[in-house]
Amino acid sequence: MNVNKIRLAITIVGSLIGVVAAGAQARKAVAKNDKLSLVNALASVLVAVTGGALAIRGARKDGDA
Image 1 (tube, rainbow, N blue to C red):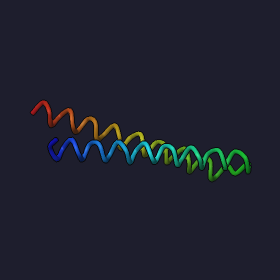
Image 2 (image 1 turned 30 degrees about the vertical axis):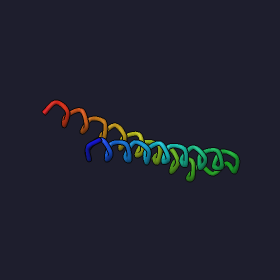
Image 3 (image 1 turned 180 degrees about the vertical axis):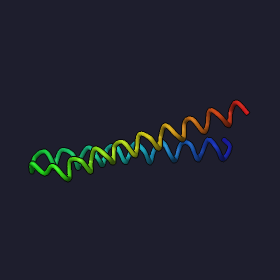
Image 4 (image 1 turned 90 degrees about the horizontal axis):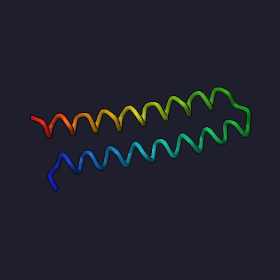
């Protein structure tokens, strides 16, 4: 396993953890009717998904080069 694959795996795992944490935050925000916290949770999901997508795109480009 080379360094790029390890980096990709770590990034994807980190993104998944971020999505799970944001989901938990979103559930708490809905339960408390806290709109600001809900917006923050949604933004966190967007950041995590985007980070994972960028990592995958970078891995694909490295594989093509």
